[in-house]
Structure formats: structure tokens, C-alpha cells
Length: 123
Image 1: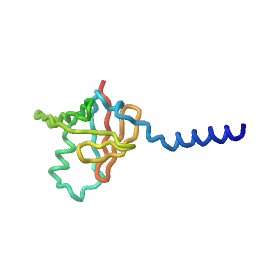
Image 2: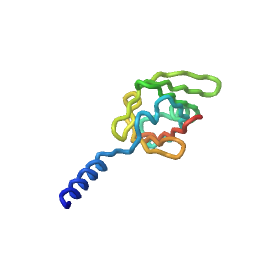
Image 3: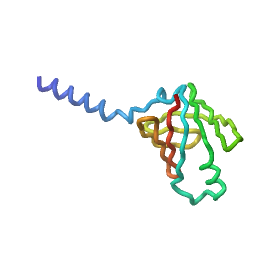
Image 4: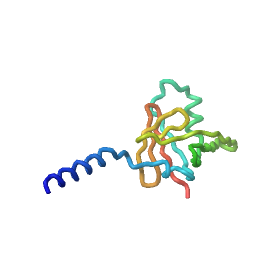
């Protein structure tokens, strides 16, 4: 009896330590998110680039197969930019940038060394 209990405890502990954030690719697939960015470090960005970033209204559309479209609108001008994405552990890779992902009530918080992005799911 004691051996079974210890074995069961070891299996449960192994499963718990193997769990990550619980965020999976299915949480993003076939969904659209509006993005709000906050720059953490301005050391490598010029003022015009920062203004451009803050005035933009991006929408990320995550498709199956690790591809997506970033629809960016600045004033009356809009542009669609394709991107690739993949969940890797607790991180979301968009193109070649890796972001730590944290689940929020209406979406996700993405963090890197230089930027913080709030993704709010669209209906």
C-alpha cells in the first residue's frame, strides 16, 4: 500500500512539474486580437519609430499552421503583413521574436526585453 502511494505521488509530482503555463497553440488558432504596445526600452529606437508604434492600431489574426496576418492601421492608411508564429514552452514566437506569455481575462500579455504587448481577443 505504501509503495503504491509513493509511486502515485511520484507520478503526480512528475506531471505537475512537466506542466507549463497551460497556454497552447489552440488558444491562438483562428482567432483575432487587437494589440496595445508599451515600449520597455527606448535605447535603440528613434522618436519617429516610437510615435509610429503608439499611433498604430494593429490586429493580429492567427491562422492554423503557424501563419498569420498583422493588419496595421495608422490613420487612413492600412497594411497587411504576414507573420509566422509558434508556441514553444511558455513563449510565443512571432517571426524571430520570442515573448513570454501570460493569460489575462480577455486575452494575453506578451513580454520581451524591449516591449510589452497586450492582446485583447476580438469577438
